Length: 198
View 1 (cartoon, rainbow, N blue to C red):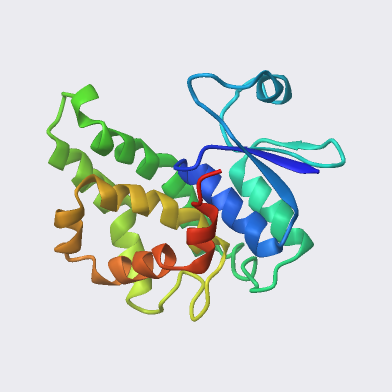
View 2 (spheres, rainbow, N blue to C red; view 1 turned 135 degrees about the horizontal axis):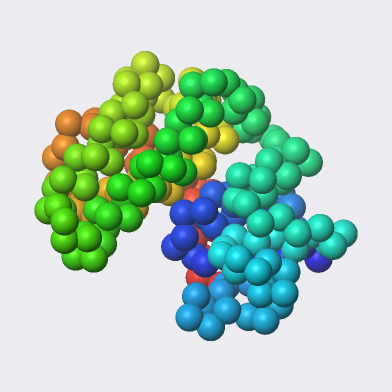
């Protein structure tokens, strides 16, 4: 059986589980304690960061976007792969997984980075990604246009973390379209299903 080594709250793992669920792939979820990683995971992937997918055929996939594409490449009932390769969506993913993640970590754990106040890190995160999302989502409900695509699924778990740092501020922020988009995903059956404790 396919086995996914996962951590429930990790945004990379969330997006991998979302794609596996949507594709309807039979997969055992192995919840990993980050303080006590199982030997089987360490043997499969020396980097030992989740998610890691051990396929039934023996293949090991160590990157969440690759896991998503692998799953949806087998079955993509809602067409999430459509539009994923558009340059605008690729740019958003690059920013999300790169510079936005950098500023998000500093915003969440600002006490570890005393060089600047917390609001500075939040502003950097807003300027590099949230503003781009808002501009896109004002025009259409999803990054895929009228329907979701893989880019939506790959990014919203990170925006979820951003919003959760200061929920009151986020609820009153100017990012109305982004808030509505995030709420759609947080209220979705798919997200609820993948967040069930294993």
